[in-house]
Length: 115
Length: 115
Figure (tube, chains in turn cyan, orange):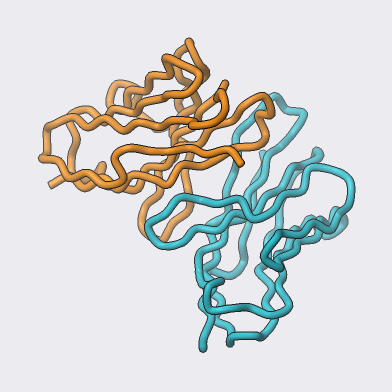
């Protein structure tokens, strides 16, 4: 079964510093992977996704994630964070090829940007 | 982009009453809709998957008689929490997928408080 692990529950970082939010997945088949962002009392917004092709995917607001099959990782990075990036970030993935469309979420990482 | 709405955004009800939450896809036809539940400071847990015109598929441990799901059209799914109890208080989030089952678009969520 597909599982998604986010190793850090909270990540504090100073404004304009770089950040990496870690995500590892387990699966014996190919995967589709996503990063979602959730602001307080709101739903989830898709940040970026990996379906196939280039292993480096980018979002419009400066985040990027790299699909690494050998390390079974899909870490999210941003070279310089802003106060407005303070939110909860969820990594999620599917197992394809098993007839299952269940999207499995990690437990989330709360990013706090310190002024 | 695809937009999914939920109504109401917040609801407070008394124990023993029923509450209906609506999930609408505003600019696309949602073949499949999903209902999630999120407890404070936790990740999203899939409750059920519904396809238009057919019965919902519930995840293990979710009571289908308590959480009634109706997906009567390609743009609307409803979740009714019957005989609500304080332990049903939670953040309920729906998502919708169109022709690409792997791309889910999330609603803003509904905060249910049962007193």
